[in-house]
Length: 458
Ligand SMILES: Cc1ncc(COP(=O)(O)O)c(C=O)c1O
Image (cartoon, rainbow, N blue to C red):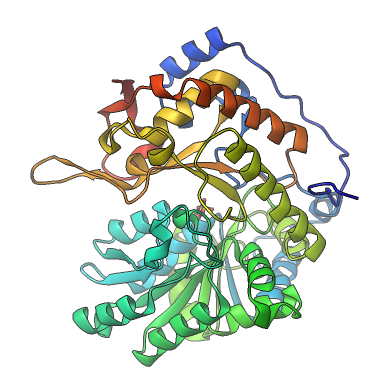
């Protein structure tokens, strides 16, 4: 039967969503100073701002919540959480955190000193900010193919191994306390990293005595792409692929809000007990005791169950097809879609879709705002508002590498009809694409400006 994908679940609880009219949306966006982060969620019809924490939990997850143990120390729910991570990722030591950025903060805060470097294929915004807050330097080495949104290659999220090694030799390995690798590479259009590249990255870090940590938010989607796109791994189970991925690393930071299919939570997983002790100090001060780290027993139960659901092959097959379908409807609308489509989101190359808007006028924000005004669909810019900055000396705007617009897909939330609706909205926008104007910033904070900045149409 030729259907583009089929949901391996049925719907048991529904949440009404509200359609506003265009006149209302103009007022709402004005009030939000043209920044979609500041629009109340109830004024959004289809919310594709993020796949983080926006997932629909299963009946099994809700059932697990009902039997959660909320003890302060040594709760049963912590041991269930720890066991799931031991079992799936293969790390013996686990520290819970309230979400991914807290895991990053605890790890970097315990091991990185001002002036040092943290390398990555590409840091995500909060990871980058956590390194900068210490006074250290986040450095990225994505492969050059990631810069080209039109080439179809299987693993555009890879690390450029030669550049990484060159850099290690240039600054000295003693100045790089942690080397990271983000799977999938969210800032590079959600592209996966190959098993070979994960192993080679580990080999380089370990050759120079650098600790290797994986930013593991979307490890299950990355494992799925390894199985589908690399013949050498086609016959392996997702469980085996996941275990192999993490076998190369000394640890990982995880935002459970992604592939553990929950609404909140995170953790650090480690191989070395001494390292666990070191990070525990900071964790107790900032997050909580080592068996809850800012999470309720309920949250740990949901994560333990969700980790197993997130590596289910039928679910991952649906997940990839569902996101790819959205890529297809957006491409059909005339938007220039980043190729190939990632696992958790479709990225539209706004720089190419509306080329008349200069980079300094944030084309992806302009496109995002027009899509919201047209149909109440919320997306997010991954471009110069997020990754650009004002040069501290001459105050000139320094632009990002890409002006991408991300349509992130919450897990198990939207149906095919919802995706078709997004496609219709995109089509309506493309008809009048030439008339879209750019934006300028009227106020911005020092770090992570995209969350809070005020903007004005040019
Ligand atoms: C690659 C990556 N790392 C880290 C994070 C931070 O996780 P959290 O939002 O749970 O703090 C995110 C969140 O979007 C992410 O995509």
